Image 1 (cartoon, rainbow, N blue to C red):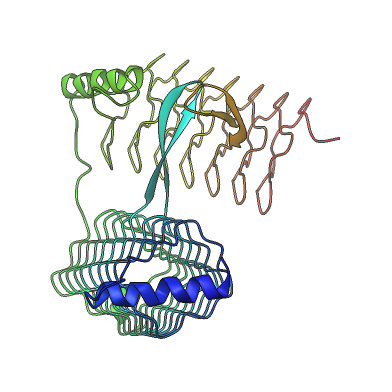
Image 2: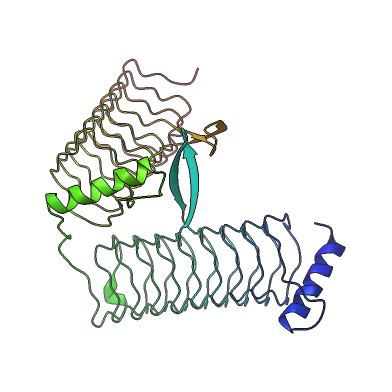
Length: 413
């Protein structure tokens, strides 16, 4: 977009906000505005889904109630900007300067997108990315940030009271004197976070990971730390599974997607079950029988699959980040990319790789498995059997392969 056109559109938006003649709501959906200077602008209620404002200067601008779904704001300067009630689902705010920004009641939940695989409708989620961002004294009061990635961000003296942060990643974040009073932090990752002077009074930290975190340095009055994993009996699960299959066969027109968080499915017989696109984050599937099951594009982040039978299972494009698959049998399993097709069933030319970042596959049997183009950063393959596995194009950055058997494995030439 040309600078003159942008300025004209913003001028018309100001008239719209003031209820004056000639006003028109600002629509910058998908616009390429990287590096632009839009500081101190009134952009409330604007439509900016998927806009590229990476490295833009947006200081003290107002985005209250704006649509920023999937926006690229990586490296942008949003210091003291107002984003009250804004839709930031799936936005990229990686390494952005958000010091003093106000996200009160904003939605930073994962952004759901629809892809078609072999003509079938699938739902994928993209977490809002705040990795390494400067959030000093930022306000997230009442915000929805479930599943958001705050890893290694600076949240010094930030106010996250009564925010929803279930499943959020706060690994290595600086939470010094941050306020989490009444916040929901179920299954959140706080490993190696600095919590000196932080307030977790009345917060819900059930199933949260707190390795190398000294809560004695924080205020934790009435904090909730422990619970028994919710149980789901076989009959109730079979009903949900039937609804999920109906959802798959009707491309979402009927039935109901299987979505469980933290449920106990240990030992369940799910051989040859179709769990494609299911959301089973943080679920306990230890010892379950999933031989020949379809788990294409399933979300199994942080799931416990120790000793699970997954021989011949199809996990193409599945998300297994930080999952525990120690001792699992994945012989001949498909863990390669899922080809994405359009609504017309034609190939889009894009693939969705299987995500095993940070997963544990210690002593797992992956003989003959398809791991092509896999995301394997930080994956632990200690003592695993990878003989005759197809590893072409996979990213093994920081992966552990001590004692792994690689006889006959196929690598890139």
